[in-house]
Structure formats: C-alpha cells, structure tokens
Length: 73
Image 1 (cartoon, rainbow, N blue to C red):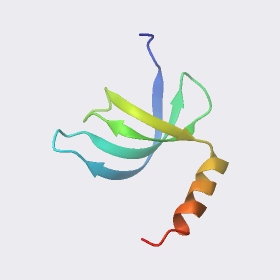
Image 2: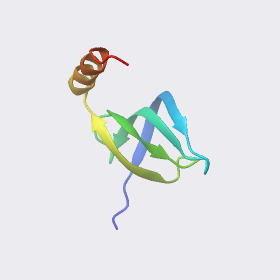
Image 3: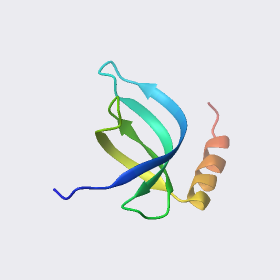
Image 4: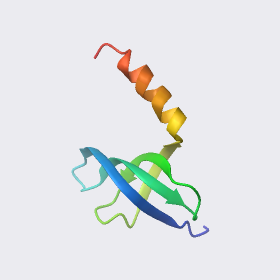
C-alpha cells in the first residue's frame, strides 16, 4: 500500500471515543500536500493510524450542516 501523507491543520471537534481509545473526529486535513479539506474519520490515540473516512470541501460541509439542521433529533 502506498504511503499517504497527511497533516492535521486544525482539530475542530471530537465526536466520540471507543473503548479501544480510537476517536471519531472532525478535522481540517491536508492530504498529500493538497488543499485542506474537512475530514470526518476514526483516529488512533496519537493519530498514527486512521480508519476510513469522508472528506468535504467548504461548500459540501455547509450543505451537510443545512441538512442536519433540518432533522428533528
């Protein structure tokens, strides 16, 4: 598997933590020296390993926010 270069530019929020110490987080991340994107995924305790996740640009994140705001929770 190819090495993936990443840099967490900003930690935005912690969503949950598993019993194994992994955390689900929303961060602003630069992948392979590209423009930073909003990133939602599971991370190991020191951010040395990651699970599958999803990235959003600013407009996509705004649209997701609007959709979530419409939900009755």
